[in-house]
Figure 1 (cartoon, chains in turn orange, green):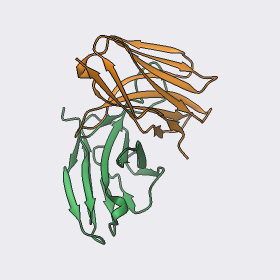
Figure 2 (cartoon, chains in turn red, orange):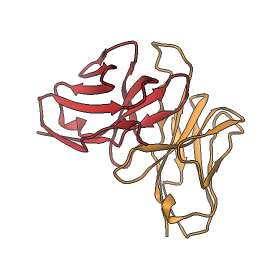
Figure 3 (tube, chains in turn brown, cyan):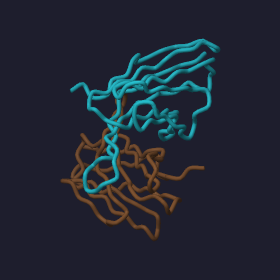
Figure 4 (cartoon, chains in turn green, purple):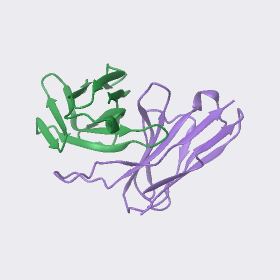
Length: 112
Length: 118
């Protein structure tokens, strides 16, 4: 039973434009979400997080939006750069638990 | 700081063999995790630990064992390797804690171990 879903396996965007990566979750007990970026042959690296008490969090070119009623979050990258080409995972945490559930990832390709 | 280190980087096992994947962190993190990533899939939690001497099962613990005798080390043991355990294994650590806005939940990952069982 997949509790975090990333339904788009891949996304291609032109350099300088906006990239929007989507993530859906099924468990209303999730209270914290993280986005990770992963390059080939490397471990994932933390990108940005959001608590369920917020609906938006920004860090430079990266903004995460959370819509709790829709159980949906999205990561916006503006402007997109070729170095952003990677696989992006979202992950959710159940309240008061120490386990994170990861989506299957979206491969972003930013074309120069 | 080396962060999270994993050894070996690659390994090929025959069915029925055993091995230990090593993981160490030098950030004095309380929490450590083992994940596996199968092709085209997300990361699945195998085991995790909230401190030395304390471990708990994740989503896919069958066929694996862990121990946590020190804060730094969290080895993953595979007994009787099976082809279904062919995967990339990632170890991660985090400070843990329950307070915002600090990024205590942020997990730092090692580079991974690519394991093939034939």
